[in-house]
Image (cartoon, rainbow, N blue to C red; front, top):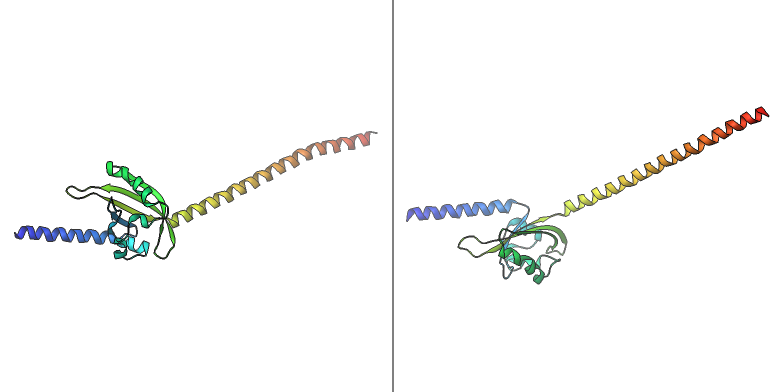
Length: 183
């Protein structure tokens, strides 16, 4: 009927709008099959981040992007999510771009099983290079501040010791002068 055609066009337009929205984010949005780990959806952020084309990514599995986890280990980590869809996994790893460059990433993964559809893993991957660099710089700054505080403490201690040595020496010197005049 005409009403069903209109609803179909409306749904298709909404889905296309949703896809365009996901393509605007710089984070990678991936969906992949629970058994094969092959990608079923990749947004433009995923294409930009990995350096692979959409077609190349659809021929790859999620495990092929990471250098930290073997396929077997990744399946072991993801298996509990299938049994409890309320659970999610958040981890840090490294993705290998097409050009061979390793990129540190934070990975969020959740298993989603929409009503009437086959379940799949949904993942958001974020490049954390900048955050790690900022954390390292902050750590270096804290180390420098700690070193400066130690030097300040040593300086204060030295001044205190010098003062404590100087006071008795002055006392002895004054008494010796008195004794010398007295004799």
